[in-house]
Length: 154
Image (cartoon, rainbow, N blue to C red):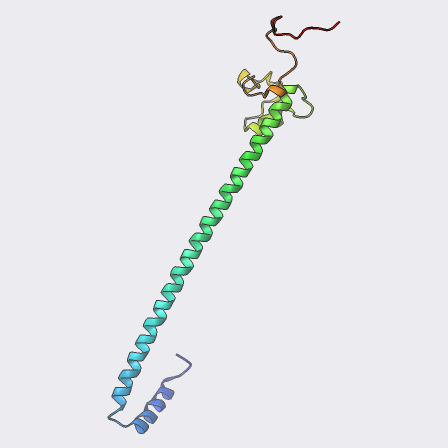
């Protein structure tokens, strides 16, 4: 306590007894004790408030970090979806050099089959429902009826 030992405290008490007298010394000691107790109570209240405020700030920072990570993850998912759509469109146009099948599978989050595994399953191929009309191949499996075809110019 402030680097004061027992001999120093004894000297202070003797001086206080001589200056204040034996009648007022107990009153002053009692007042000093009450003052110190009040000071300790106030400092513990302040420490508790500071601790509470620190906990609130830390929880808000954790929540902010969690939200930031979720937003970052959503952005990554959106970017992956955009890449998948672009890869499907590229695959639908037949430009296999621009988007190899392994890149398409990675963009879709699918496992990449080994090279000698054969053709991919039909569910992995783009369908007319998932392919945009502008990216549809020029030839289709069904033949247009003569009424649907524009007149040919000779």
